[in-house]
Image 1 (cartoon, protein in one colour):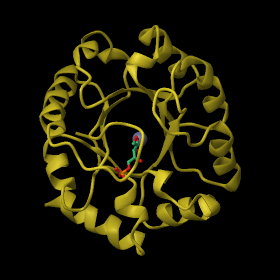
Image 2: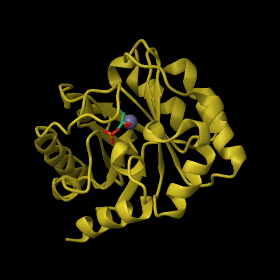
Image 3: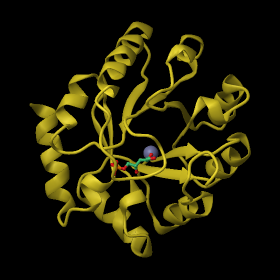
Image 4: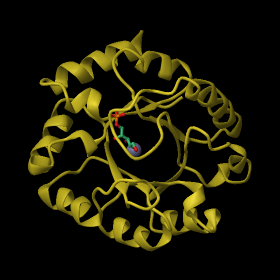
Length: 221
Ligand code: DX5
Ligand code: ZN
């Protein structure tokens, strides 16, 4: 298993002070920045695009940016995010006509690629793409909004994916997104995840360091 990454989702940050929010959360111990892209088509919400990713890079953010595309169709926006400085790009398989080709598009530009599975999306696609993945992202809420409750059935799915990753012998990150908090992060880690997205659990608190430290303490238990 790889080292644990705490990935604050900037969806829950104060957008009027985004650069400062990202600097603060990195100073306070975040490992990567989770960047939620919603298109008001694949999901019923509209957020941020490549310009904002590029603005964060120009602001001086050097940490990995983990771009979660909730966009359909997905291919057209990928080159823009690569240019804008994305480190990881993950997409939902149902948003791509040709999953293998989309993964190649991302990796050919030396960006890391991953697939995202909604709570009800079956995992069978993984059978044919394990050798092309850098990350598997399991949604523990239905995509579209922050602040929803963790769907417990994700833990079972997470255990399954952990077994597949271990059997593949590859370095594939296993990320969980939605409703992750101090009081359930340990359970999520025990199910095999190594990358933890947390939006409201971090940004709704006054002291990000205290929250991230508390999450790390849970992860060492
Ligand atoms: C939901 C997004 C999540 C969201 C998580 O569609 O993909 O990344 O921001 O927010 P919390 O941690 O508040 O559930
Ligand atoms: Zn996300």
